[in-house]
Image (tube, rainbow, N blue to C red; front, side, top):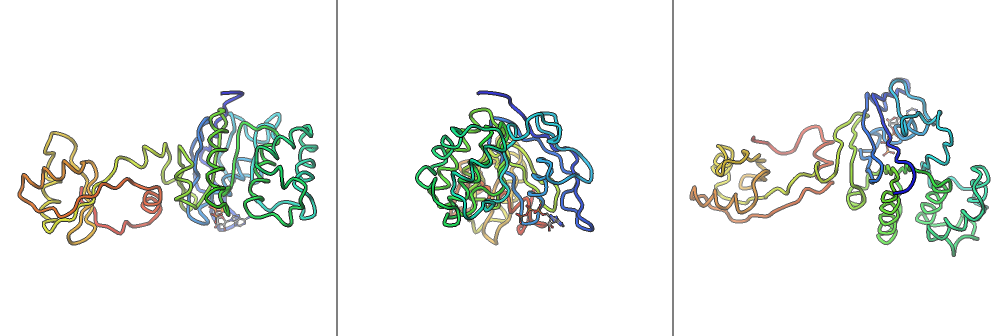
Length: 310
Ligand SMILES: Nc1ncnc2c1ncn2[C@@H]1O[C@H](COP(=O)(O)OP(=O)(O)OP(=O)(O)O)[C@@H](O)[C@H]1O
């Protein structure tokens, strides 16, 4: 770890644009030293929240602080926070190096930092090409380089994976991991769920401006579930939820079809043993780990598509 460790604290944050409440009474913490994913469907309020954290939008009520201070009171904001909201904010006639030099001069960074970042972001070969010819991936890299100029302890990145190919995503994962390992606070918004799953340690999930879930991804995802196919599904569901066979907690059972159950809280051998003890037939047992996509759909859909028994 190097330098300060600065958490982002969002507390009871609300933003209304006329009749639209973009963010409603939202509270969460983003810890340093980990990569946090900020997830939500389109229009959920992610960008508005990140803009409030960086002082670009003023809240209707509530607070957002970085290391205990609102953005407007930070002594050296560009050295503390780096943010990317638009990966197209370049003058098309400028080269990547020109672009970074302009921002370096504004932030009081030496030219050597520009060269360092062009190398770090894999842009050394494209450094003297005009940005009008840049691919989406190159634009993402140049935006990230701009955000990193002041060597900030806190990074807020709005959809940094947009337009990156698998190799670009793998590179982004490595970069964000290194930045977090240096004790930086890294908040990354996305709707690219399958990709962000590989990227993040913690998640904050919002829907319609409100918090749905927050915490370490491993805790939210929970232990694997077991998908059971059985012609005796109904009897098996009753047996599973009648009481713990082994003195443990009562499993939670979802009925996902006439002959299919998803069992949470009991592993595959436990389900098989119980079925055998009750002479119930089991045709298939599949252990499935919860993907972030399933969790996200579950958390952001009004009504679960399945009937639940507990
Ligand atoms: N300046 C504005 N004026 C009016 N409404 C706005 C403004 N900015 C955002 N909104 C509205 O606030 C809501 C939240 O928008 P926001 O861009 O924060 O969501 P988001 O989660 O970032 O969405 P996306 O994933 O589509 O980028 C939307 O209904 C949007 O139309």
